[in-house]
Length: 109
Image 1 (cartoon, rainbow, N blue to C red):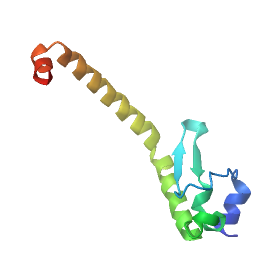
Image 2 (image 1 turned 180 degrees about the vertical axis):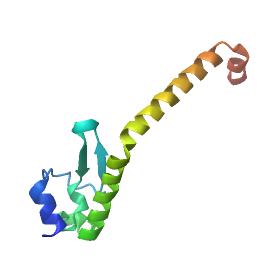
Image 3 (image 1 turned 90 degrees about the vertical axis):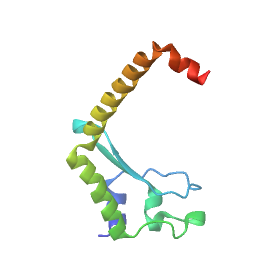
């Protein structure tokens, strides 16, 4: 069974806009609600018209799927959420600190 047939059989076949030339895949969700999304423009046999020849072969799709499964296994979604929360706190703390220093305001005035 080829990877294209496997994807068509076991995944929802959501058609992407046909005039978009990009191939994409991503992983999202937490705990039991994790999902991996593969755009149909990623599959070479699905690319017709302007997208002819733009898709990936089976071994390339397996590599992309393996890459997204690596994000899943390594818990990158949760790690990046925590990092973003810390960075947001630091930025807001910095703005709050600099807000009281009027000399900085006059440098840009």
